[in-house]
Image (cartoon, rainbow, N blue to C red):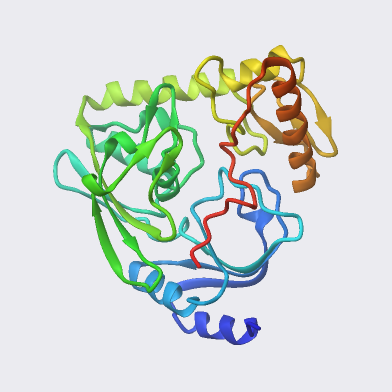
Length: 304
């Protein structure tokens, strides 16, 4: 049995890390849902991250970016959560390529790149993700994805050692990569030179589209389902008359049917119930099996 008090004190000794006990995960997910984690640690640099991974070896440990696409159980997580966002936020550029810390939030990164005249990530404007998490799940929008920009990824493996994965080692597909059971510490990405004003206009246009087409300024986790090849998931859900479906404090957005929003007091069980109902109805009416894009409790990235 894990002595979490002892483990907490050992992690606190790292120094350059924020360590919290029994921290509610609702404060660390964009859906604002989730019970407490036994311990949550936010390493501030690569050395702290390596130490955190090494110390928690043998303990149930989860890795998260900024929590923008995960659904945490109401009962919480019986283990340690290593959160990359909030630390590991470096940015270096040597021309058209950048090397960025996995915990770097997408929005500040996009603004910095615009200032440098570097284009490529404008499609992600408005997404509250960390770049590490975005790369691991190959986050995409408006016909583009992060994986197409990646040149290499430096990871921390199960033992706390650093390893570099080149482009040839990496596999990206629709909302998926082969970066698993490790931590994406640094990502090298290829950008394109553009006029700063052109980039800023692209960012503004992307933000305008998001505000127009998607629920804005309310807790959500982005797209719930992956889009089938034939018809987008949101259109299928809309065709089934499920917009506005509410269970407890969760509701299918009336603006975009592939979003579930938290009306203020939603629980994981409410969201899960909506997901089950939507999948059943879409399968019955359209013979289509919807696959989750949302990462639920059964698929959270467990390091150990």
